[in-house]
Image (tube, rainbow, N blue to C red):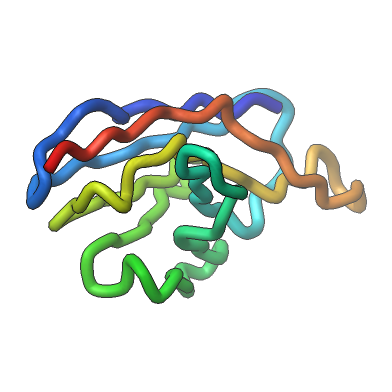
Length: 120
């Protein structure tokens, strides 16, 4: 199973970016998907998660500005980020809980990270 994240880049404060993460490989089903981030010099933190049914959860710091969604046909999770500020600067990682076969274990997989830099 591989996760390929894309969409990061440099943006000015107040701007927007949309991250995408495609899950590929041997997939039977995908449960929760999510985005995490690691600001410079800090630990990785939760940004948002979404269940297979579409229920979402957000960190307080991004509520009202970020929106997570998924396409279960394309095995893709998205993160729409609006009203970005310099505190959002971080490497963003996607995550997916994947079952690779019927009755198999549910394992967590991570993408390689995509850098988002917000200039003031």
